[in-house]
Amino acid sequence: MKTTKTFSCSLGELATRLGATLVGDGERRVSGLATLSDAGLDDISFLANKAYLKYLPATRAAAVLLHPAHAADCPVARLELDNPYLAYAELSRLFDPMAMPQEAGVHPSAVVAEDVSLGANVRIEAQAVIERGAVIGDDVVIGPGSVVGADSSLGAGSRLYANVTVYHGVTIGERAILHSGCVIGADGFGFAHDGARWHKIAQLGGVIIGDEVEVGSCSSIDRGALGDTLIGDDVKIDSQVQIAHNVQVGAHSALAGCVGIAGSTRVGRHCMLGGGVGLSGHLTICDGVQVTGMSLVTNSITEPGVYSSGTGAMQNALWRKNAVRFKQLDDIAKRLSRLERDSRQP
Image (cartoon, rainbow, N blue to C red; front, side, top):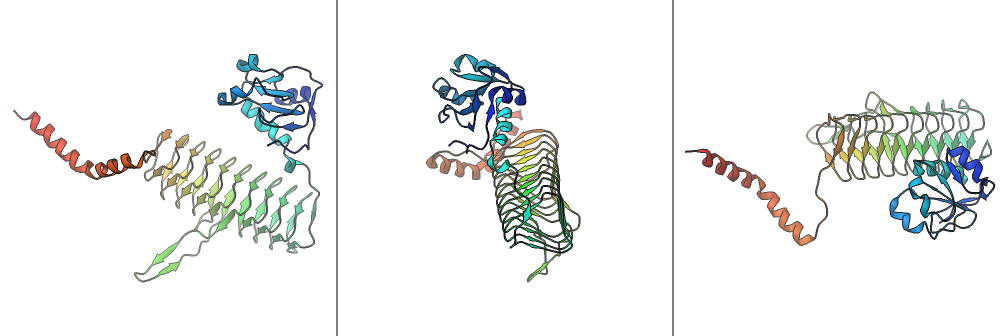
């Protein structure tokens, strides 16, 4: 699938912007971004994964972003860089139609409390609600049906897509992106049991989100029970992620889809949690930890590195045999210990 034609630039201008070495006509203009196999004569493409090298010789793109090691296989103009994927990331933002400047203003159907502080060039779309005491920074876009609760704040350049809910007392930094359906600041899962029924614990804290954070669709970040739930700068959160009350996530960490983090756990800086990872409550995960997909972490991690749990998929018949043996492991270990002990006796 190609990008919508919303941007046009010469290859020379792109090379300067990306810090690339151009081999080809610097005056040639491109107006779209596409894959190697889909690109047309007005498109620029990229090669960042060797798995797609087979498509390079036949590409019809006007030019290709690639590493110099693959230059000989490129039949068209090329922009050479050491990190073509990073350059592709910047290029994608240039061609993003949603990145185009949008007209400021408040839609007639939006409801904005009288004491709300609105910055310059703010856009509030249809049916949005901004409650009392909220502070909206410059260049913020609030999508249709979104709600910003009382005394919450959005930093400059942030964007809420349609139907985002930001509860009361939430602070969101600059240039944040919140996708549709995400909920920031709902009550944490706090209840006391008297032996017969549950009694709700009021969640009195808030949520503080740093700059340049992105939260995927239908993800939830709960408010703190007493203190605040904290999300550091440049944290990237995928869709359908649950972050419980009083969790802390350090700067530059990334959480893939369906991650679940139980209450009061602290995740360090530069951590990566794969899809479906679960972290138990009250743990500490140090900086620089990577947890692979579908792993369950029940103890704190104090050394950086890659961690995994669970077993990979296999044929059902083999899995059933292994499942039986899993139940026998304790007995096998005890018998092995006895054999080792007996073998040491004279």
